[in-house]
Length: 468
Image 1 (tube, rainbow, N blue to C red):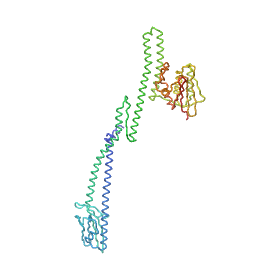
Image 2 (image 1 turned 45 degrees about the vertical axis):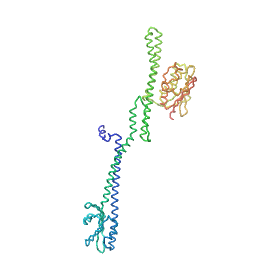
Image 3 (image 1 turned 30 degrees about the horizontal axis):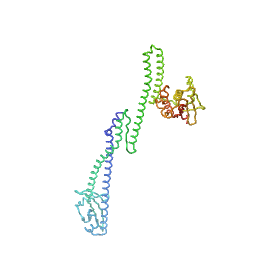
Image 4 (image 1 turned 90 degrees about the vertical axis):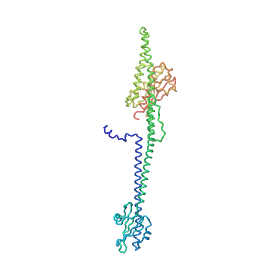
């Protein structure tokens, strides 16, 4: 197969695109001007022959009519009947073999030659004699049992010279036109591929360190502009993706640096004094365990998001009762013996098309956030499920510290935590709501946040009803 493909590669295919366009444009121009020249010359020849034939035929008919009426054959009368000075007349008396040559302006071919070479279906023929070219036209006429043959000759040199000059002019103009077309085609080809060259040069300047380059294009709304727009959009997406990746790496490094530093500090404390001081040893071990658990949760969430970035997260959607998922989550919360009570409000079955594990993780994220940011342990968290026939709603509300209104647009950003000075004693990675938002997007849903400081927060997730 590779050999066959290599055989199809011709020298033309190896040429640059601009050269191909130039050659194709010039080739089309050559074919066009050649066809036009041949068409004009052919029609000119046909027109000259037809006009000359008609002229000679009319003259022959006038002379034949004059003879058939008994007119005397003489030079003056024949000249009167033949107004065209380029047409020469020879009248042959077949009975007496007498020849009358009238209005001779050039050496006329012998009568035998003319008669022998002018025989054709329509008594009209073009032939050469010596260096001259003649048109011949014959007509027979009778008068009182006498037979006459009228030979008309027309010298054809002028028409031939005109056609030769015209042909030379065509050849010269075609050569000039071809040369001009080469330069025009070259200019057009360079103009056409200029955006492509700009794309190539821009692509050469683009690197991971600099994705800000864009192609500036000013031209018509054609395929090249679409290519430029598509290229710019692709680079824009790459820039956003790389910026997110760099931000993700930076934030992850920063978040991991803190627990690692704490663990290293307590390890050094144990190494210095913990071996002989049980209190320091116990305190260090407890803090190391706490930071290890925090780092484990952080790494799990980072791996979750990393799989999403690489499109390796497999989602298994099927008809799913939100009531069933909520019931299982509340049962697990009861096992934890949490001080904050979680209530479920579901008046009717609420059905969606989703992944059980992801929806369960979504509920856990919202409920855990409610628990973490609720200082009064005597309050409740409410999980409400309902449907209006078109959409299914999951609402989780708490009575915690709330979120400032100006902070709400940013709470789903990775590693973002609201006013760390207010909740510095509350552990967290800032990844939970980012994961929740991803889960909701995978289910074609949307999140609406309603929160007031010191009054609580309500998270409402809207899904499509299954079957709608």
